[in-house]
Amino acid sequence: MNLEEALRGFHTQLRAGDIASGYQLLEQQLQQQTSTPQDWHVAMQAMLQAGVPGAAAALAEQALSRFPHDLELRYLFGNALRMTGEIQAAERELRAVLSAQSQHQEAAVSLAHLLRGEGRMHAAVTVMMEYLPATPAPEVLLATIAFIRECDQPQQALQWVQQGLAQDAENLELHTIAGELALELGRFEQARVQFRRALGPHSHNERGWLQLATTHRFVSPDDPDYGLLMQARERDDLEDLSRAAVHFALAKADADLGQLETATAGLRAANRIMRRVSDWSANGYQAFVDGQIARPLPVSVSRLPEMQAVLIVGLPRTGTTLAASLLARHPQVKVRGELNWLSGLAVQIETRGRDPAQMSQAASLYAAQLRRDDEPVHCYVDKNPLNFRHLGLAEALLPNLRVIHCVRDARATALSIWRQMFAHEDNGYAYDFRDIASFARGERQLMQHWRDALQRPFFELHYEALVSDTPATLRQLYEFLDLDPATGSITNQPDPGSVRTASVWQVRQKIHTDAVEGWRDWLPYVPELTEYFPET
Image (cartoon, rainbow, N blue to C red; front, side, top):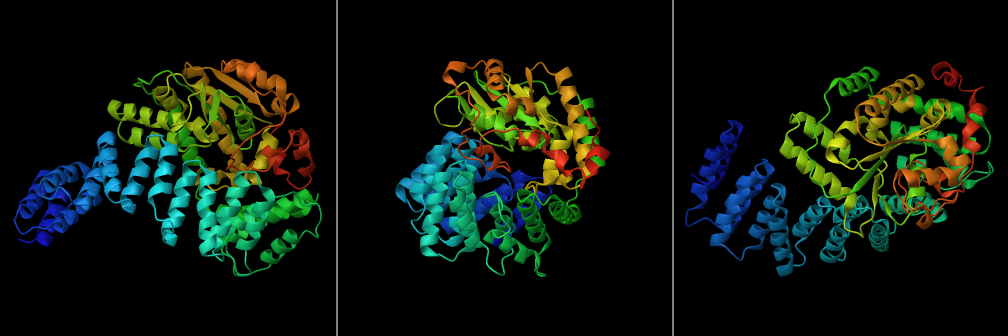
């Protein structure tokens, strides 16, 4: 038997559920005196790809006893330990590889992902910055930039983008990312320049079209960006998402110009496209809501140290970003953006039957993403509005949880949702008023259920109160979160830092009440607002 045959036997035994016999086949083959380090590499990689990292780690220990100086074996051992959750041992092995060979790209990436999973964002980015090549390959560069953005370090990501553009000034994807990062940091004119560079005459860049319109308020149809969007609309070669993005962007520009009838026509065209490519189901969503209400609450297994987690939830476009940006001005608050951890953990936990060990591990993981590796504070905020779907699990994972529930006039909310092109498929309801109404109804049902069932403090934050009397509302929030108002900033001007939501423009403007009744101007063109959302 040779290694190739042993590998086939391993996969056969694995499919039969007999990991031990498959492992033994490979072990016997590799114990031969003629086996090379490369043979062990191949076998370990096969095990990792097959999803049996524990077996790969056991094999690595044998390999390293024969070839103790082989860095690739040590890297694979570290990777296997990381996948089995032996974090400290994995970090030790991966750092040993990098100490011996600083340009070991795979070890640097693996270590960075390990650190990010532990919430050590600054350390993760430091590894990426220190150990990757000064001029990485294009695909490595893009992956590095994406990773650093996920670590919520836009300034460092921008450094890599600028480095890439210095090597390839015509790279349209890098110009798009540069625009997104500038937009995220509130550098609107810089973002506008980058998006224009990314949008050539044959571009299919839906992100660029959509976000170009968010860089400024249109005050004249002579605006060159308006002309650029009009030209794009006339193209007959755009794919669905690009065409929808152009329609959404033009509708935003037309609304800025007060051309609401034209804007509505564009929004109807955009939403028709998005309904066609989205697969959101009102019946499926209602079944989920009913299941959450009927299902017993998870039992808390968390043994976390004292840490106050705050979830800002509600329908999108109800002021969640504004609330978070105002709270972020308090020195004892850290806002972590819109994390997607809770929904992902919910799927895993429910699939495994709420296994207590898995839930305890999930609690530590989620807490690490909130806590991270910066200076400790009193409150850690996850402002993903759709976390309202999983508040029962959130209470089980975060024993000191507090919930801020953002609410807003139903018609204003529905119109604002309908005017957005969302990136995440969970918002597939947003393109039809009937679906928006169904989603809102489910949200109300769930929030009432959580209020009745959970032993958690809730604060109902009304958008209208927040924008009409910001200082008074902010004081109430401080009191709810046990924050000292004397050390906070009670003003009507938010300082949001980095923003990655659809509110990136609005949240950086001085707070005003224009949007409170602004939906009424749209009523002649959008009768669905009164059809599906009765006066409340």
